[in-house]
Length: 392
Image (cartoon, rainbow, N blue to C red; front, side):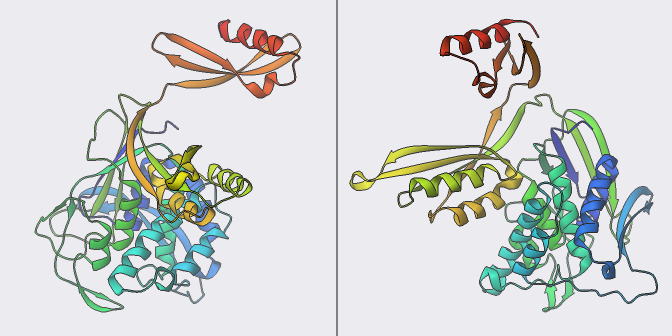
């Protein structure tokens, strides 16, 4: 599968968790097995089975996702609904690489919105929107999809606002729901004259987690997909469309630069924290520098390069693993050279070489670990240069 450089979401009818998952699996059938395997790990038998089905919404063919109740058995409709319980369930499920981190980050956007709206601490948030197994399915599937497409940029067209009232566990609330409005501050909206809830809180949290760029749907179109919601809209299809592009500069990407300082940790504590942060999915690099603080006090400055969709999870881990009480971050554009690795023979040894496609011609560098077993510095340098200067 060619991983796209950019994915654009077109919320024709709106966006909910099931619409997002269906549209993405329609566009990328290669990742269906991975996503369905993650859902099998998170959902108990009494929750039912995820089912994808083709159909139509209006005049448009689309894919739908639903949780099919178990045969001849009473379905339990509710999962554990507190934020802490949901995060623990996701972490303990043994999901595929990076899925749990992305799913937990989506949950965190929902929890922070609920905490602000109801004025309660984060750990006391009890979800109503996401208490059903259906919604847990959507969050974990969205996390699995994000993990399967690392490095892609995401954008979304203006969102349909909808109007009217929505019946919830808190009574009747205005559309868009307060949690949706809280999460999507700064996003563009439009009014197409059609009422009802068009963007759900789960759909909003997925957008908040993924979207880091303005709507720039350009490049070579690699794939498209369409996911349908459950409602029927008058005069238009209730769909979310996905357009996936190979960008002109596939090596250009957005990266989050995250930094903080500490002045009260031992060297051993810093080493353990750095190792754990480096191992986190989405962390591309971590550097630590010794700085001089106020009153001539030495301190250590951490700087991490993080994939934007993993930023929330990494920020939380930084606050858990270190003594810092504040973080700084911003998004940067960067361009990365195309590179690949190969194995080369040198005498009786096999050495790994990294090649980079530079504008003036390709360069190569031998892995230092592979040279460590050689004799003197001169011998190591000579072996490395032989391979670096030889054509691949």
